[in-house]
Image 1 (tube, each protein chain N blue to C red):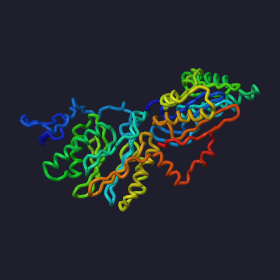
Image 2 (image 1 turned 90 degrees about the vertical axis):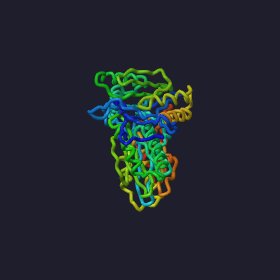
Image 3 (image 1 turned 90 degrees about the horizontal axis):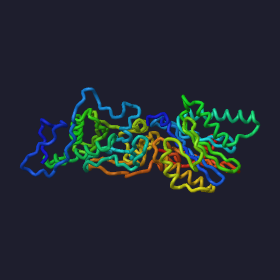
Image 4 (image 1 turned 60 degrees about the horizontal axis):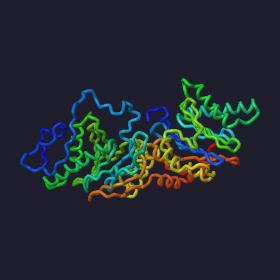
Length: 275
Length: 204
């Protein structure tokens, strides 16, 4: 059994205290040890060039409304200006009532959200009741504070359903944990916020909310080069989560929205000087 | 993404066919990771039988094109005749080398038809001319377009085939480059006419 000694909780340099007599069948791989700590600030991982910070090249968003929580994400992964994939899954299914979104380092997000999933299940078995969203997000925050300044890159949202309702938290690698109603994370978040803030209402129906999430992600993928691919949408309600859309191509959305606006591509092109 | 050639992004490609040439370019104008417009012109008609495609820093694309327009207009007035494509190709190289120690941040491709024979020349930013290949690329998505070109290209294609192949190469290449795309334009030049076609591509 993985057992936590409260005095070492959240510290990166000690991980597990093993009982020599027990067979450890639920052992997670050892968390990486931080070898040194700088007192001066964050590790330089991007040559110091803040304007080109690709660490959070993505667009993810989530908002709370009367029917629960809606999460919408894009699916592009880029290495510099090279598009390595257009089919990434940026919503991580932690368990049947908790979802996490991925922004920043994919490895960091995948590992630590899986670690969180393990912790949630252990808690459930030990205590007979599910871990609340607030506690789950706080647990993750504790881990990330332990690794502060070591170069982890995560900007994730934890969204879930528990006995007190549906809750949305934003957690990042600086150790920030914020509870809120509307969040958008990633390089395309500025574009998504513009659309989201304009049309958000708490009393939206599920269909309106899905439409809003899709539209906001589409606009971000159009303007931001690091976002694109397909839109994936999840809905969290009192019975857990449902995958609403597994992948709507944003290219199709572009021409669909253009059609709705009456921009069919004959007027503008004809007037342009092309040669 | 930190170089001056990657600031605005964009890709161009040129191909030779049987008594015809084709040029294609994307339509994005961006500033690093943000897209500003999707209708920026990167291929210019210098003369009825010469096309100039430019990729690199957009301000230099505009300035270098204006400089070439001026040169060809003055040539027409002084010599009272049209400029041959091979002459123009040389002119581009000289004009780039004139700025050897403060260069234009562009990588041009010149394409033309001289007595029905296709001419295709490409340069680095300080004027090294290379005119022996059947297809050339430029810009941030250049290397990805190369792969598609190698796969689809065959010598002596007809104008219709060439249009298809160059369009496909441009789109496949731009799909892997974050800084190029948002539309494409294909120009096919034959002895009789210049056809311009706008491609429906990913807008993301």
